[in-house]
Length: 102
Image 1 (cartoon, one colour):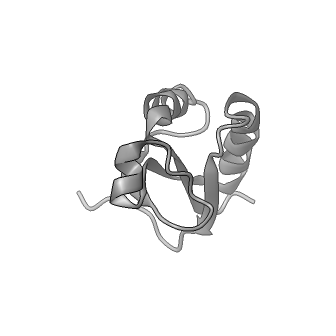
Image 2 (tube, rainbow, N blue to C red):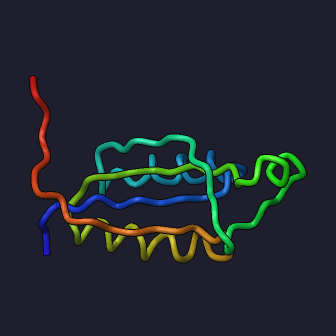
């Protein structure tokens, strides 16, 4: 249950700061993460602004975190309350190796 996983989350761009601030506060579960801009495509994606409608994609933010699976599951449970109704999308993948080259 403590094997490493990569937890990935996507939120609409207006929720970027809320998501990144929230993740940053979870010091008991993780040590760091990576965030970047993303473009959402597909029939279930909401194009919220005229600019998104013209571009044909939704402006989104994606965050990736490598952490133990139990910590990832706890983070998801916490976020179910804090991000209810936001359409936050997440998925988890196994990590075969994780480290840093010094």
